Length: 498
Ligand code: ADP
Image 1 (spheres, rainbow, N blue to C red):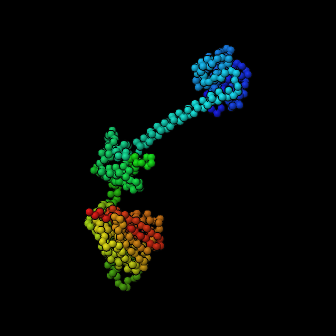
Image 2: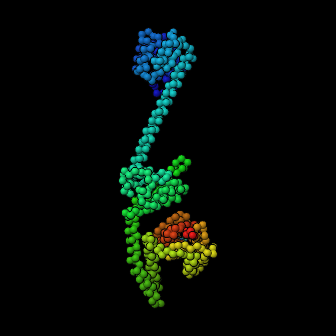
């Protein structure tokens, strides 16, 4: 068969020249390519060398009989359609030919239109056959592609370095890759189908996975990264997300596990080192600071002004170093979890009154107004470490004093917002450009510009504040307009009343 069905090749085998040539004219006009043979054996010879789609075969020819030719075509070229031309013969011949595999017949003599109809019918059949072939080939390809895709995904999953597990919408594990099994020493042949806690003994992870699998997390950005440790001193980080099907229906969860044990050890080593160095440096520096203070105080009036300035500068620098070291020590203590140890009930409004009173002197020297505005008569108490809370608001209010020019105003506003006590430190100071906003909570990040140039600091205040706020289960946010001022908002959750 030829490849194209828009143009077919027809072989006319007939001993009558008029029929051959007449049919050729009609078929050529229909867009067929025509080959001709005046005898059966010659027709078969052509078929050996030429691709042909359709044969118009006269049944009554001298030499090889049409039925014999039909038999051979049917046997050797089963795809070729044969339309038999039944000369004077009877309907029986036609029927017999059809039984032997002819597709159609046309009685002789025939009108051009009759020939067109019969050939068009055969042509349609060829088109249909080509289309069926194309579709089944496409289906076969799709299946092969699917199979390849499936095994590719399987291979990727198997070789993923991070542990991956998948659960169904009941929270039962349906897949664990080798890395996942290695992380938790799960035997490779351990059957699937149980809750994740049966494979990883951590109830927090189980709760998270159950919640996600059952579609309880609507907003995916809300899903926390979960860290947990096992008794063998291994630390892991779990990222879990829902697997969504059609119409966003939750089909289960996919959990990716990273072993962070080495990171934890390194981090601890680093914190220990910082804590140790800071600790070792603090005492000698404090001594130097005190001694400089004594020398400056004892300096005689007549001492050269330049000497006095050098010593004062040295004293200031030493003081900055001591502050930096104190902040570093605070941070390492927070990381160790030892700064928030004395847990008790705190009256936030009273604590803020004390801090504002204490910092009043500092704001007065800059001729700033510092006021506390309390919205409620009584605020619920919160539970936590009072020193940590002092550190939070002490730092934030001190920042406002530092980064607000002389004569500016600072307001500490306290009210209730839902289940939280909301404390806002509002100043009309320098403000912060938006490009810095997401960085100011990073360690050592300080904004350097004309206005902040002479303000000393360590860049550790806000990171400390952030850590402490989250130790209360709270959040901190900042809103600022350069040239107009900043608002730092702290939300501290109030324990549910019983
Ligand atoms: P430090 O004050 O020691 O530099 P912080 O971590 O407390 O470090 O603050 C980081 C930076 O954020 C500061 O250097 C300052 O530029 C900016 N900043 C903090 N609070 C304010 C504020 N209330 N107004 C303007 N800028 C502020």
